[in-house]
Structures are given as C-alpha cells and as structure tokens.
Length: 82
Image (cartoon, rainbow, N blue to C red; front, top):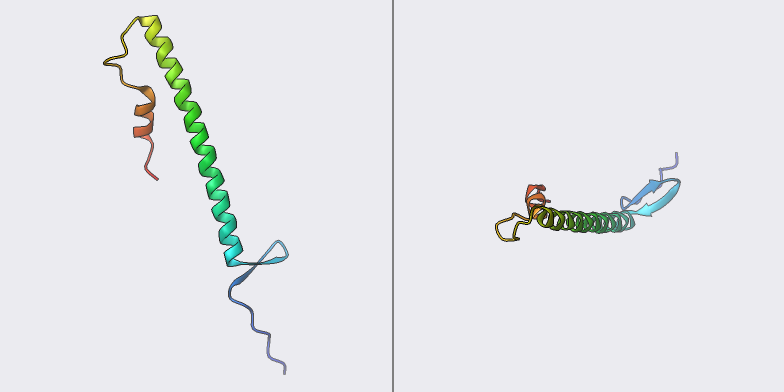
C-alpha cells in the first residue's frame, strides 16, 4: 500500500490552479486597497457636491458662511469608524 503524498499546507486550490496563501493574501490586499481608493474618491465627490450645495443655499438665502455647519462634516461624523 502506497502512502499518500504529503500536501503542502501553504497552498490552496483555487479555480483549478494552485496558489500559495501569500499570493492569496497579496491579492486580497490589492483588492482592499482598490476598494479604499474608490470609497475615498466617492467621499471626495460627495464632499464637493455638498460643498457646492451649501454655497448655492447660502447664496439663495443670503446667509453668511459663519454659523453654518458644514454638511459634509456632519456626514463624516455620522459614518462609522473603520
């Protein structure tokens, strides 16, 4: 009776290809960095949108900038910390 060959514990089968856990970890790290970049970009766009909305409302209502709470600051404070 032939013993089974020992399997390398640092490898995982994925889509028919053998990848090391280090490669998988690097892939997840790249995906996480890309997701963080996209989320930061969307937050920047949201900030610019609300900033322009604030300016439009201030011009329409003729209110000075002092004493008006920045809308984006409220949104950022309302976001859960990651």
